[in-house]
Image 1 (cartoon, helix red, strand yellow):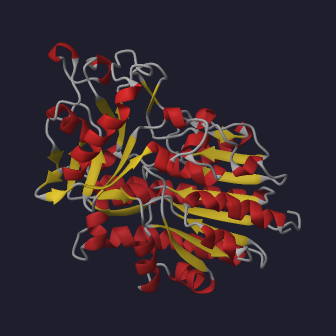
Image 2: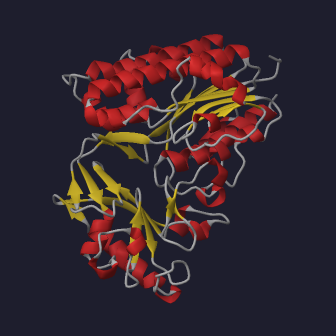
Image 3: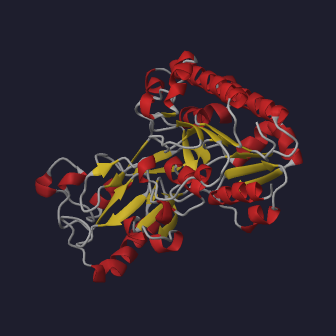
Length: 427
C-alpha cells in the first residue's frame, strides 16, 4: 500500500444511536466505546422514507433522492402502474469511490447490484440476485466461494424458526468477516468500506430480544453485536495513525406495536378504487382513484398526465393534497395517532428527478410501521416482525482528523460523502 491517507467506513445497517450508546456503555461493545470516547459521536437523521435503498444511495453519493433518483426499494415504470426494482444501474449520481484516484474496496453496500467496473474491488449488497453479477473483479469469485461467502442473510428462515435464522445470521457474518480480512490484507486500497446488514435483519425479527433481558434470544442478540465490535477493534488496531475511521448507520430502529396498511385506509375512505371490484392490484386501479401508496410510506396522486388511468388534473392537486393530509393527520389506530410527520415532495426533495418523487411522504409515530400492501384485508395487524425503522435515530461516529464544521453543519447522512472527499483533499 502507498503512503496516502486512507478512509475506512464501517456501516451498521439500521443501528440506532441509543442502542450503540447503550451497548458501548454496558460492555457489550467495548472497542466501540473507546472510539466514542476519542471521536465524534453524533445522532443523525436518516432519509425520508427511512429505508436502506434511499439512505445508502444518499450516503455514497452525497446527493438528494431527486438528484440520485432512488426513492424506494420498488418504483413505477414511468407512464405505467408496473413495478420494478431500482438497482445500481438506476443510480444517477456517481458513488464517491468513482470520484477519487485511489483504489477502493467496497463490501456489501445495499442497492449497489449489479456491480460495475471500478478502480478496486466491489461486492454488492442487498438486494443481490446473481453471484456472478455481484463481484468485481470476477476473478475474486472463486476465493469468495471458498470462504462460503453469502450475499445476504436468508430472512425466510426466521418465518420457519428463529433458531435457524440465527444460525444463518452467524454463518453470514463469519464469511463477511473473513472476506473483509482477506481484502484488507491482500489488496491495495485507499478507501475500505464494509456494511454489516445482519444487524438490520436481527432487529426486524428480534428487537424484543434486545429490550427483554429474559428473552430466550437476548444473549444471541448481544453476541451478534459483540462480534461486530471485535471487528471494529481489529480495524482500529490495524489502522494507521492518520487514517480516517467512520462508523455509520443508515437509519434507526424501535419496537413495533402495529403494521398499518395505507392502501387499505385509502380504499376505505374512497380515495382508491379498483376496476370491476377485482382483487386489489395496482395494475387494475380504477380511473376514479385519487391516490395510491407504495412501500413504505409514499403516496402518489393519480395524475392524468402521469398515469394511464389517471384522471386527476394538475389544477386539483393542491385541494386533494390538503384532503389527504387531513386524512392522515387525523388517522388513529387503538386511539393513537399513527402519522407523526407528513411531507410534500417539494419540502424534502430537490433535483432533476423531482417529478418522479411521491407527492406525499409519511413518517409514523413510535410503534407504527407504515406499509402499502395493496392486498391487505385489514387496517392494521401484528406480524412476526418486532422491530421497525426510525428516521431520527441514526448515528455517525468519526475518529481522525477532519473538518468538524462539515459534520456539524447539517446532521444528515448524505454529508458523509462530503466528509470523505474533504478528508481525501487534506492529503
